[in-house]
Length: 169
Image: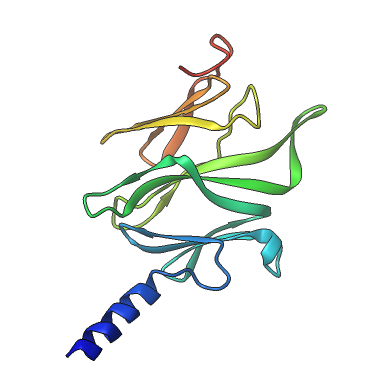
């Protein structure tokens, strides 16, 4: 009897480990999420997998969840997460102005994952995520440059560009 319990607990803990190609993994409301860095992949693209299926990939060297940007469901599984990625090549925004990092929100609260549009802080393209206020209807995402964004119905829109405050409160 003891051997069976040890075997079952060993199998359960083994399923919580990341695959050898993943840089980070997590349990979400919809299943197992894995991040794979582009600098470690043969196609130089970063990938996000849900239950082994590629749900997002892009031309970036790194991808992952932001430390400040996630919320859990009632079963302590990730329900929504702000994902960052660092581009392989800088993206030109304006003349002599480039950004190296961008964000998307992944929403696992419904029957299938929703991946938002790309967004980034406009005043300081390297500004870190400051805080997120998670709500039932919408969520507000704030960066250190004072910019704020609202996530609602699968879409992220800027609600404050941070030009008046200079930094988040």
